Length: 230
Image (cartoon, rainbow, N blue to C red; front, side, top):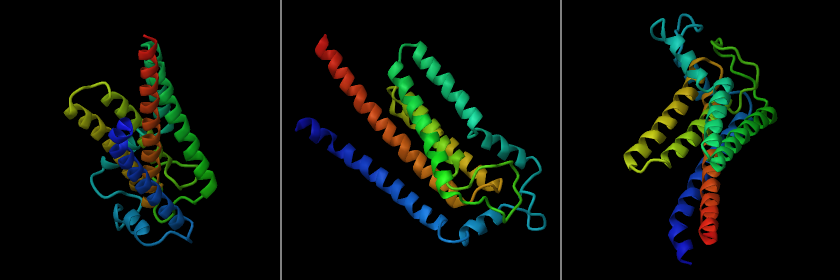
């Protein structure tokens, strides 16, 4: 009972976080399937473009290149290479559990992203010209979902290796910031509705959180088993 009591606040907090993310995703999924896009989705897409030429972003000429560089941080090639590099390092440094955790979280996220894209099959925005080549469907944003999964997973893993709370907050903040910037870049490039991006964030954060909680529970169980053997 003492163990349960000590964990109860964290369990409740985890359930609340998951409930908020999942409820938000369900509401956005209902919106995405309820007729053609409208309202704020369309207004936001147009608000970032030059009124006289919708194929141009507002701002200086170099801004478009910066946005494309940022969106590449959520590209599947970059995320795959990052995942392979990190899991390889963890495996070679004698941390197979952490390596399996990262691999499971990322592969699961990819299955989730592609499966939902196929299921919803929402057309890409056509209200503004695309500034980036895309081929898959729109809902949810795979870049937003996967950047949340990969960077939050790595940020959580790194934060577990440091002692100071300030460093933990810094690592998780950077991970969140990168995910937010990647998602925002998808709207700026005109390849996703804002609702696609928010749905991707919610699902990615929920999946990363679930994987992290399971990883921590398994790590404690294995640690307790090792102590008993000693």
